Image (cartoon, rainbow, N blue to C red):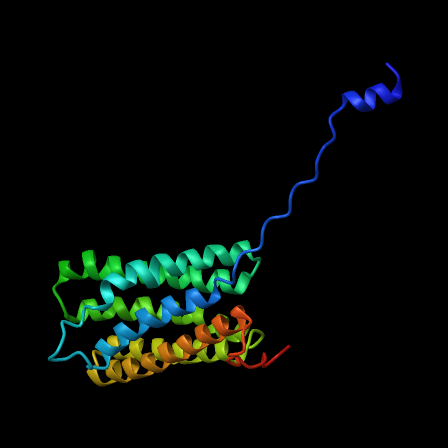
Length: 211
């Protein structure tokens, strides 16, 4: 067989097709985090006292703050965004875990007792530790994202201390800070949507504090 015949007989190896780009999942993850945080914080701030059960957040902790945010984290892995992937996946797991704790663990000890409060305090302390280094890393993202992690850090600290000391006042204060956290996350989400659309309406997310 000649060289030319050999080349004709050997099929060419086609280069692998480049993966199609996907939309930025960040605004979705932030929106999921914001809404669930808003509902739980409204209950902690006593906005629902006397007019609601205070458990409106529970289903959305699983479905929106949990599953949807976890999916956003997985898509951030696809986008090679290690910060977004770590943040959304972790807080998606936080909301799913909080749903499971509230639905299946807390009722065993009785609602609202000191041991349940201390469970929540330990959970919040653990996530505050995680949030601390994410807060430090967020200074390299943009001002809006930094604002989310800063207000979230304060929320977790106030709630953790409040639940450790069984202080209704500190828990309520944590609820109010949590409402600010939710609004900040919604703004960051809206900024991401506006910039992702590429239209005339653009909401500034601010520059990174450290670039």
